[in-house]
Image 1 (cartoon, rainbow, N blue to C red):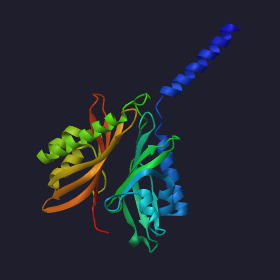
Image 2: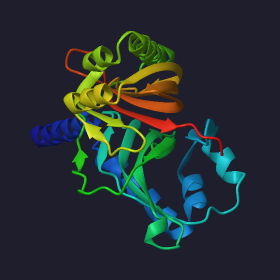
Image 3: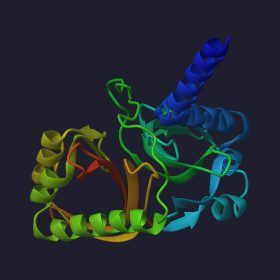
Image 4: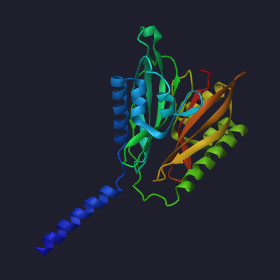
Length: 287
């Protein structure tokens, strides 16, 4: 009888230990995004954003402003917004994640008035382990001619104990972002070649999202793009496998110079180097 009890205890402990080390599935953030979209559909854009906002969550209108401050300061926003997550990742500990995908905004006046584009949302877990919207921005472009391929991937690593010094984790990403920004002033093509993930995606206003270093660098070269950028803030998952940064950029495209907000998603590769998994530029326009 004692052997049976010991065996049952060991099995129970093993299952518990496995649950503690297994990474959080990416479906957690996909479900959070889908729930947000349902609230927007049912209650409208303003109430939808307020329902999921992280207390420190920001949107760019055109500069960074708290989600709660912005949406509490406006009347109910007209029109309908529909979006669909097509690209998503989550940290092994489940405390940081992102979703991205196409959106359609309609003011109800017919198909000619619809606005098409892609959004990027960064999510962060609160004290109750519920994902909240930390960053949201998007780009506009013509209606896509082809369906977007879904790319949801679970973390490759295991859960880890949170760092006792969270400020160090943040400073690493801030410094990495600053190093990349400095390298952009020397050579944009060389910088992206060095820092882009093999799965890297690039979101630029007026164009559909681009995937892969070759496609991205060809676009930068063909458009004669040069970039100067300045880091504003950054953050990192407690499992040290996913991070984000954002700031301002001044981009020369041919003979045209414009100001943008940028957001970057960083992932740690097998060599423990931080690579850019996603970068999005949102044009700064006076509203």
